[in-house]
Image (cartoon, rainbow, N blue to C red; front, top):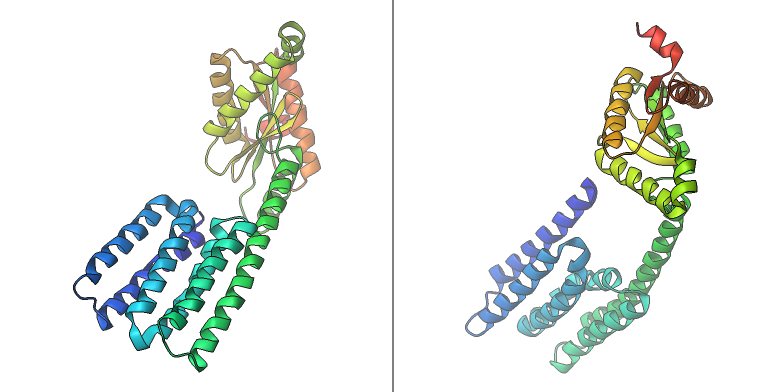
Length: 318
């Protein structure tokens, strides 16, 4: 989760604990009711242990049972449950797909609507509002669950469109979008970035002599290495064929060259030879691509399995 999500997740747990604390403070349980609170506490701890992804499926039932318990225990103050019952329905929407969210939410809505009536609580103005609110909240549960399903599908297809299926790395389109964002950051005052192009040497021979399955394995091995060994904040992707690219934010070409050399040495130690071309951003993305590709060609002409920096930048840094 990102920082805001963690903050909201923590706030929801804090709010629930404070609400239970208020209930216990102003309506303390006595005698045989104490073990019931212990059971609810264990259920909530189980949900907390399951984490943000697993918590809703535990909480929706634990909270539903707790609300019914408080509705029964609170006597004339039963209507307070109405303030907290809305929390039940988003939990159902996050815990289950739409069809099951409707069933689970509907089950608890029916229980909450019938409970005051069965217990002989007031059936006038307060009860009418309480019952109708559960029906509206149930409808919103279905809407939220459906929205989550559609959002998940859209996110899936977006990720598919921007991910290379063989290596799992961002594809060329994703890299180009990232480069455009990074260029915009530079225009707003961020330090310039560097681009590294990496091309596997003699890859055609691997495919010809050992087959495409072995070629795919080599590509996947390189991708795994790049995923786990590039620095935090850097982006590695498949540029196309046997070519990969590294976007290095706020990194000058000299530092990028040193990083590329470390990666080259690490790959060479596993038997994978690759040539690298390094160039720094100077205000024009097309020019950046051209210079990085020219540096890569130079590394190939030097005998392969080398790192080369764009000639103009190398001269300017001396």
